[in-house]
Image (cartoon, rainbow, N blue to C red; front, side, top):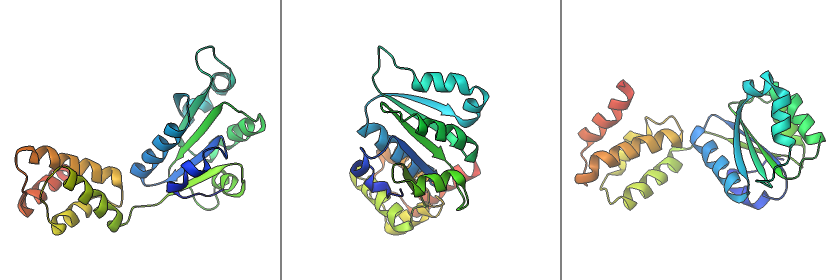
Length: 202
């Protein structure tokens, strides 16, 4: 079942399995944080390669109960179609007290993992597309307003141009500018260009 990023809370009781995929790393991080926030449990992080190298330990850690935690949240990072068999096995076991979050990069339309989550109403699929300039502009505007930093829309546009549609990149840029502007609340275009280009050169 495909849902929008802002619908996570609405569907919190619909599934124990989440597929969050796409190239927008910043938005994916926000989605994962939201899933963790609305679900109780200790968080465990795995890499797909790590699971494949020792499936038995992964299943033991995932499926076994504990005296210390009733619920678990398992995050599988850098996942691809190679994890499909393991996910199917977990689905068949009908786990109840564990949430599985699959964090993937770009998945093509023919991806078997993506198709599984899109077509099954008991699984949640959350695609994350690049942010629009308008979305990034709003994020930057609110940030600078809260920080009481005076900056023109033209300069905000200069910052956004360097972010490749990813709010994670934007966050890095505006926080860097905020640190620079801690004693100077009015920034010139020349200063903005210098700060933005510093990260590019680095």
